[in-house]
Length: 231
Image (tube, rainbow, N blue to C red; front, side, top):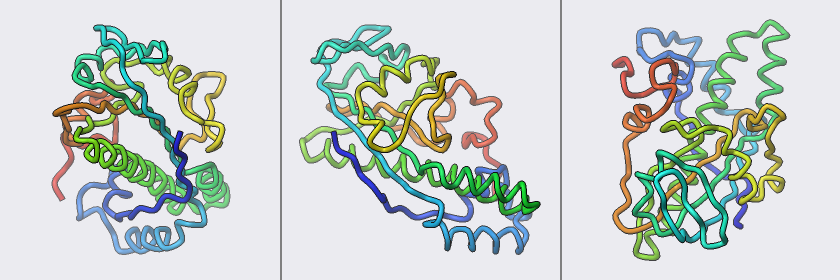
């Protein structure tokens, strides 16, 4: 069960602003950009990027679930249609830790709303980048074995209920990276993500816009990519 601490990645001003619904360059005022750049410069103060994953062989794929070689059943309907070619599945969890959330709250409480607003966007963009780093890692491992990996799927996509998060958390060392589930079934820290990635021959990779179209929140999510405004 590999665990990676202090994962490195780059953050882009545009990705941070997109996370806060600022997509048009005409809306990016100099002050906004300068504050964002300053936050990026100091990102290590708030970010504790960590990921953990485990890879399991698949014994059987059914329309509503898959059975792992260890006997564990995962209800993935309707994602099983996309993962039906997979011979293995990677279960991945990522978090940037709790420090950024606390800093965002402190900025808002102290009247520094712009910094709080932009730091929250930085946190969301950081989770995106961390998740992509994890996907690249899984794909690299797959390619080294003559295979390929699918796009990642998370509870909430494709009609896959977040009620299945506990099953995922039982299969990865969440406690080693201080991730847990709240009593309401949500991931803590909030700036975290859980994913499954199929591994096999000729697995399909989807573009970010295509992934947005598969999400249950595609029509209401403020971060969607499939109909972004042009810059």
